[in-house]
Image 1 (cartoon, rainbow, N blue to C red):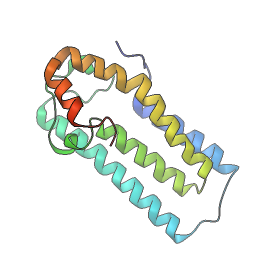
Image 2: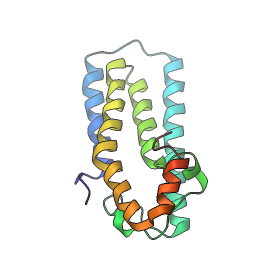
Image 3: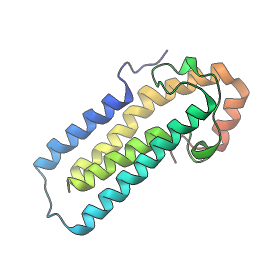
Image 4: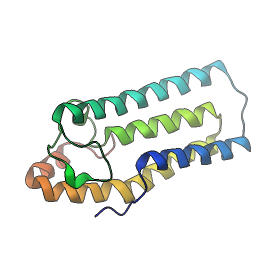
Length: 149
Protein backbone atom coordinates (compact mmCIF):
# COMPACT_ATOMS: atom_id res chain seq x y z
CA UNK A 1 0.00 0.00 0.00
CA UNK A 2 1.39 3.39 -0.95
CA UNK A 3 1.78 6.08 1.72
CA UNK A 4 1.20 8.74 -0.90
CA UNK A 5 -2.34 9.30 -2.12
CA UNK A 6 -1.31 12.34 -4.17
CA UNK A 7 -0.21 11.64 -7.76
CA UNK A 8 3.45 12.65 -8.35
CA UNK A 9 2.46 15.14 -11.07
CA UNK A 10 0.36 17.01 -8.48
CA UNK A 11 3.39 17.03 -6.16
CA UNK A 12 5.46 18.50 -9.02
CA UNK A 13 2.86 21.24 -9.56
CA UNK A 14 2.71 21.98 -5.83
CA UNK A 15 6.48 22.42 -5.63
CA UNK A 16 6.49 24.49 -8.85
CA UNK A 17 3.94 26.91 -7.35
CA UNK A 18 5.86 27.01 -4.06
CA UNK A 19 9.02 27.83 -6.01
CA UNK A 20 7.23 30.65 -7.87
CA UNK A 21 6.03 32.16 -4.60
CA UNK A 22 9.51 31.98 -3.09
CA UNK A 23 11.08 33.38 -6.27
CA UNK A 24 8.68 36.30 -6.25
CA UNK A 25 10.28 37.48 -3.03
CA UNK A 26 13.89 36.64 -3.90
CA UNK A 27 14.55 37.59 -7.55
CA UNK A 28 18.06 37.92 -9.03
CA UNK A 29 18.82 39.77 -12.28
CA UNK A 30 17.93 37.64 -15.30
CA UNK A 31 20.68 36.86 -17.81
CA UNK A 32 20.93 34.96 -21.06
CA UNK A 33 23.09 32.39 -19.27
CA UNK A 34 20.30 31.67 -16.81
CA UNK A 35 17.88 31.21 -19.70
CA UNK A 36 20.13 28.60 -21.32
CA UNK A 37 20.72 26.75 -18.06
CA UNK A 38 16.97 26.64 -17.44
CA UNK A 39 16.29 25.32 -20.96
CA UNK A 40 19.01 22.67 -20.65
CA UNK A 41 17.67 21.44 -17.29
CA UNK A 42 14.10 21.42 -18.62
CA UNK A 43 15.22 19.50 -21.72
CA UNK A 44 17.11 16.91 -19.66
CA UNK A 45 14.04 16.50 -17.46
CA UNK A 46 11.72 15.99 -20.41
CA UNK A 47 14.10 13.46 -21.96
CA UNK A 48 14.20 11.43 -18.73
CA UNK A 49 10.40 11.53 -18.37
CA UNK A 50 9.72 10.58 -21.98
CA UNK A 51 12.35 7.82 -21.98
CA UNK A 52 10.85 6.35 -18.82
CA UNK A 53 7.32 6.32 -20.22
CA UNK A 54 8.46 4.91 -23.57
CA UNK A 55 10.36 2.10 -21.83
CA UNK A 56 7.25 1.20 -19.83
CA UNK A 57 5.09 1.28 -22.96
CA UNK A 58 7.49 -1.02 -24.83
CA UNK A 59 7.38 -3.42 -21.89
CA UNK A 60 3.57 -3.18 -21.86
CA UNK A 61 3.45 -2.40 -18.16
CA UNK A 62 1.61 0.27 -16.19
CA UNK A 63 2.85 3.84 -16.03
CA UNK A 64 0.40 4.65 -13.23
CA UNK A 65 2.48 5.56 -10.15
CA UNK A 66 -0.51 5.03 -7.89
CA UNK A 67 -0.77 1.35 -8.81
CA UNK A 68 2.71 -0.22 -8.66
CA UNK A 69 1.06 -3.54 -7.79
CA UNK A 70 -0.26 -3.63 -11.39
CA UNK A 71 3.28 -3.79 -12.83
CA UNK A 72 3.50 -6.69 -15.26
CA UNK A 73 7.18 -6.37 -16.16
CA UNK A 74 10.38 -5.31 -14.43
CA UNK A 75 11.95 -2.75 -16.76
CA UNK A 76 15.73 -2.63 -16.42
CA UNK A 77 16.79 -1.54 -19.90
CA UNK A 78 17.25 1.82 -21.57
CA UNK A 79 17.09 4.75 -19.16
CA UNK A 80 16.36 2.28 -16.36
CA UNK A 81 20.04 1.27 -16.51
CA UNK A 82 20.86 4.78 -15.26
CA UNK A 83 18.11 5.31 -12.68
CA UNK A 84 15.40 3.20 -11.07
CA UNK A 85 13.14 6.27 -11.21
CA UNK A 86 13.89 8.18 -14.41
CA UNK A 87 10.48 9.86 -14.56
CA UNK A 88 10.97 11.26 -11.06
CA UNK A 89 14.54 12.27 -11.98
CA UNK A 90 13.00 14.05 -14.95
CA UNK A 91 10.54 15.87 -12.71
CA UNK A 92 13.42 16.97 -10.46
CA UNK A 93 15.34 18.34 -13.47
CA UNK A 94 12.21 20.15 -14.66
CA UNK A 95 11.78 21.72 -11.22
CA UNK A 96 15.48 22.65 -11.18
CA UNK A 97 15.05 24.32 -14.57
CA UNK A 98 12.01 26.15 -13.23
CA UNK A 99 14.00 27.30 -10.21
CA UNK A 100 16.81 28.59 -12.42
CA UNK A 101 14.27 30.34 -14.66
CA UNK A 102 12.80 31.98 -11.56
CA UNK A 103 16.35 33.08 -10.67
CA UNK A 104 15.91 32.13 -7.05
CA UNK A 105 18.38 30.09 -5.05
CA UNK A 106 15.75 29.77 -2.33
CA UNK A 107 13.24 28.36 -4.79
CA UNK A 108 15.85 25.84 -5.94
CA UNK A 109 15.90 24.43 -2.42
CA UNK A 110 12.37 23.20 -3.12
CA UNK A 111 13.88 20.64 -5.50
CA UNK A 112 15.44 18.99 -2.45
CA UNK A 113 12.06 19.11 -0.74
CA UNK A 114 10.48 17.45 -3.77
CA UNK A 115 13.15 14.72 -3.80
CA UNK A 116 12.75 14.02 -0.08
CA UNK A 117 8.95 14.00 -0.27
CA UNK A 118 8.81 11.73 -3.31
CA UNK A 119 11.43 9.37 -1.91
CA UNK A 120 9.58 8.91 1.36
CA UNK A 121 5.95 8.89 0.21
CA UNK A 122 6.16 7.47 -3.33
CA UNK A 123 9.40 5.67 -4.12
CA UNK A 124 9.91 3.67 -0.92
CA UNK A 125 6.32 2.32 -1.02
CA UNK A 126 6.73 1.55 -4.75
CA UNK A 127 9.91 -0.36 -3.96
CA UNK A 128 8.11 -2.44 -1.35
CA UNK A 129 5.39 -3.30 -3.88
CA UNK A 130 7.89 -4.14 -6.63
CA UNK A 131 9.90 -6.34 -4.26
CA UNK A 132 6.73 -8.32 -3.50
CA UNK A 133 5.97 -8.74 -7.21
CA UNK A 134 9.44 -9.35 -8.66
CA UNK A 135 11.33 -10.68 -5.62
CA UNK A 136 15.02 -11.41 -6.12
CA UNK A 137 15.01 -9.94 -9.63
CA UNK A 138 14.04 -6.55 -8.23
CA UNK A 139 16.45 -6.91 -5.32
CA UNK A 140 19.31 -7.58 -7.76
CA UNK A 141 18.25 -4.60 -9.88
CA UNK A 142 18.22 -2.36 -6.77
CA UNK A 143 21.77 -3.40 -5.99
CA UNK A 144 22.96 -2.47 -9.52
CA UNK A 145 21.10 0.80 -10.19
CA UNK A 146 20.73 3.83 -7.94
CA UNK A 147 17.35 5.13 -6.85
CA UNK A 148 17.87 8.60 -8.37
CA UNK A 149 21.17 8.99 -10.25
